[in-house]
Picture 1 (cartoon, rainbow, N blue to C red):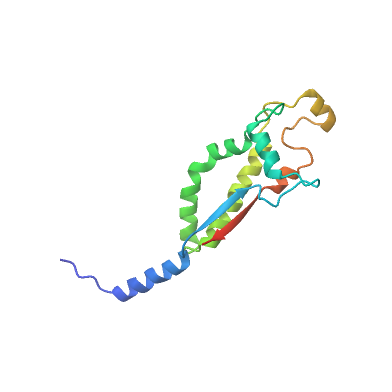
Picture 2: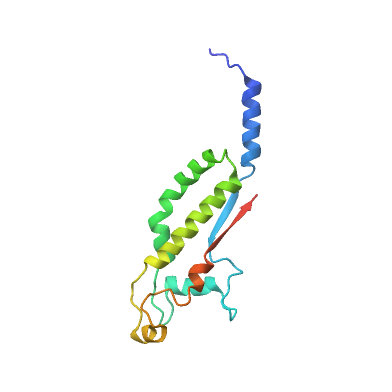
Length: 147
């Protein structure tokens, strides 16, 4: 039977780790509730209509594409970041939020299909879907909640 030594050091280390990790946290990434267009329209609503389609607006699944393409990497990245930050949950979730926000913005830029209607191209002066005055892409954000 092995005898463990240094129990107090282990206990102090685990208590310190528990203090750093705390009760955990959550990061929300996307178009937060306070993001609106100048006329008061919710950016989240416009993003959802674009992602899922509605009426004459076809589905342009930039958000769902981003999740499908990148979500498998988020857990391992967060695990590595926790170690690199010495288990600082706030710093780790801020890093993760910024990373996913960038992936969301990249997905908006990468999406070209379905193409815009000719009338929309004429009105905007260019043919890039999801970009008009860049309000939606610039409204992508994240918020960290520590429990």
